[in-house]
Structure formats: structure tokens, C-alpha cells
Amino acid sequence: MARSIISVINQKGGVGKTTTVINLATALAKKGKKILVIDLDPQGNATTGLGKSNNDETKSIYNVLIGKTPISDAIQESSVQNLDLIGSNVNLSGLEVETANDANRAFLLKEILDKGQEAYFHRYQNIFIDCPPSLSLLTVMSLVSANELLIPLQTEFFALEGITQLVKTIDRIKINLNPDLGIRGVLLTMFDKRNKLSSQVDNEARKHFKEKVYKTVVPRNVRLSEAPSHGMPCLIYDKSCSGSKAYMGLADEFINQKNQSMGSAA
Image (tube, rainbow, N blue to C red; front, top):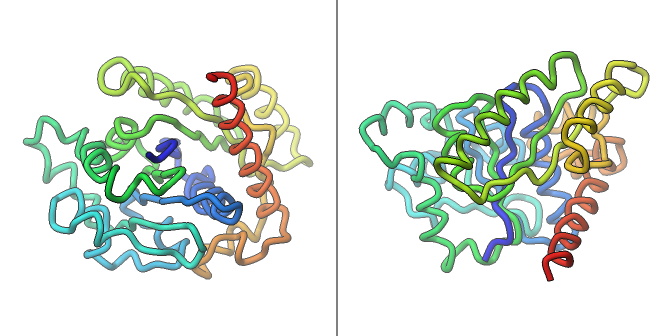
């Protein structure tokens, strides 16, 4: 069984959500973990960032959700060993309207993941879901399907204000749809040590989320911004830059975090 299904979520755009999905998944794959990324954002940036086309309807999560493509046909190997992908495209943006009469539409993705567990998903140690930057049906579907959340938090003004609404949404989902949902970690992104505000947000986040905030912080780094335009993770584009080193460090912390929780449960 996949050890965890992790939604990477923040309703605010431009916080490093997709960058985190691509590069944390790549770092874990490089450490020998078998990883699947599901791109649930109609923009398809995780898809193109892993070197695949976001115009291929037959390989899209949209076609899987509407029953047009079997899950086995949608899983693609990425250019990174141990890292597979179910891609996205713009058609996904119409799903909310198309499923308006389906009372169980929030469970569409969960049902697919549950049905495919034995045949396909058991091989993955982690499944990452890249959510759209909004609290839409697609985000709710992701929250219903996941057992853990990773929240990237940009170290800039107003960053924590948006998190309040997100936490309220998470609490509602836990009460009504998915009682097993929990926050795996909060990742501080776009950190600039020269900027006093970055340090202030860092302190506030650690006060609010305590040990849930990863020790690793992702710096503001031009290589992280450049890599997607080349269709590759930053860890492949420039493995020695500060952004790549941060995500490799995060992967170690992520693995140790799970090992510790398994140890404490034993």
C-alpha cells in the first residue's frame, strides 16, 4: 500500500506549491523511493515541469475522472527514475460544471485511488497531489483523497492570513468527509535571509504551527524559477544550486519524519 497520499496545498498562487511537488518528488525518487505525482491543477505545470505534455488528453487525470481512460493507461514514466506521473490539462477546469449533478463528486478521485490500490498504487511509497491554487472542487477532491497535507508558505507579507482560511477548510473536511486528514508539514519558501520580513514570517509560522514547520527552508533562487521552462526538475537542471540543495535536505527531513512517527507508533 502507498504509505502516504500527500496533497500539496495552498489556495494562494505563486507560493512554490508546484515547485515543491516536482522537486521533493524528484529528491525522494533519487533516494530510491518509488513516487507518483498526480497533477490536479488544470494549468498542468507539474506535468510540463516533469517533461511531459499538458495537451495529451489520453494521459490526463481528467479523462480518468470522467471514466474515459483507465488508470493503467494514464500513468506515465517521467524522465526521473522511480518517479511516475498522471498528468493534467486544461479540460480539468470544466469538471466542476460537468459533475454538478453528482452528489458524490468529492469522492471521485478517492474511489479511483482505492480501486487501483492493489493493482497499481501499492508500488508507490508516496503519492503527491498537486492542487490548484484555489479552494475549488478539485482541491476538495484532493483533501478527501489524501491522508496528509504539505503546505508551502511563502515568507512574505500576508502569507499567514491566507492560511487561516485554509485551516478552516481542512477542519471542515476532517469533520464531514475525511477524519484521517492531517498536516504532515509546513514548508517555508522563497526565503531571503537579507529580508527582515522573511525572518518575521519564519518566527510567526513556527509559533503557530510549532514542530509542523520543517527546519529546511527553500531560498529564493533563480534556478528554481528557470528549471520548469526547460521541462525538468531543478534537481536535474542544476543539482548544485541552493534551491536543489534545499529540496534534497527537505527529502531527508521528510523521510526521517516518517521513520520517527513509525517508531513512536511501534
